[in-house]
View (spheres, rainbow, N blue to C red):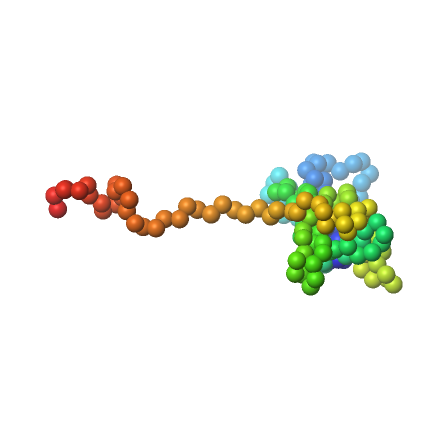
Length: 171
């Protein structure tokens, strides 16, 4: 669960830094360095030297526990949905099932969650005001399935393909 929370935070941080990188000048009196992990208009890449305490890595965020309104675990983060610009659109929550079997995925906007400290100094968790029943009854998240190209069998139908000749043609 913490993994997912960290992933969300890391992705959010990258999105924010990308937006900040678009400004050409720093505020007067600012001693901050240019935003990291962004590409400037000059084509020079900028790098992030280290992770900050308020940032999460996607690898750690996956699996983060999701707590319901009653503070009981109702699922965990199975994936993160983001657009081409890097903006997080939703956290995909796996609800129900047993050992991954029969679970249902629902996608919820990041604003649907708040980060809460883990038990006994453990990893942070995400809390929502929804109940397990509400998530179980919510519309399932449908992953995009890229269209498959039309299959060709190679059997000639009406002719006209390479090497085909109309019936009765001289050979």
